[in-house]
Length: 349
Image 1 (cartoon, rainbow, N blue to C red):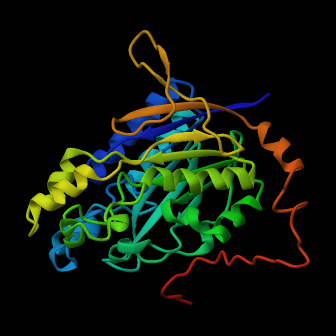
Image 2 (cartoon, rainbow, N blue to C red; image 1 turned 90 degrees about the horizontal axis):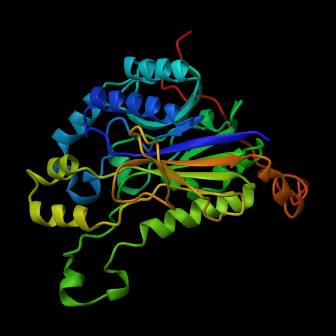
């Protein structure tokens, strides 16, 4: 019976500092590997920031932050990724990591990307299909090139970022490739409303005045995919560090309101789900000499590494009941076509 140990790194980046964040990722890879992790997962755009300021500050106030975001984004074939590739080769692990990716065709174009690196080789390079809501102010739309499964000795692994897990066709494209482990990566927070909006002050619109339940929304999406795909789920969220709150709030026209919104926004969680969509037993490991293990259902407010052991044979039984890509599908009625061509702005011949 093959068991895959997965580590979800519930961590904060060194906000808008690619070099330090890459170093932190490498340290976490070695730490998780010592605890026998085969697959190590990082949050959405872990290197080097998620542009949460675009949800809270007017676009005209964000030019400096966007400029710094560009400078602290990285190339998919750059030195930071190469260092992470070296770490996966040294530890013989598979790593999924989110990056804010620079384009070789533009000095200002960025993509919300996720890399799956298997023992030194980039086996999946996915760019988020559609940046969600305020993310459009930072990232360009991706393409279908990365809608593919990493076929590794630790399992067949797929990954989507945040809102992509709401896209049934993107999810189905991974299900149809015998996906066994589905990674959903998330930002630390997702504010949809300021706590001091005019409606809230007047006591009107009470059913809409608060942020929606970020944790529940993510859990529903990830759980639905596991249930439909009969795959294990790895939910990995970032942690909102104090340096991020300070950098976003300071210099804004409403510093106190923005700081309050960030501090009050529900934090994302990192957790594991089984092929029925139910929570999977997980644990943390004391990295001191004792190596003591502590059962934990999820991580939310504090940084840490969460571990779970996946028996991939459990992905089979549920296919008897409803295999949505084969026996429980009407292939004569429905057909999905996926264009995997990388979309380049210029083709030189």
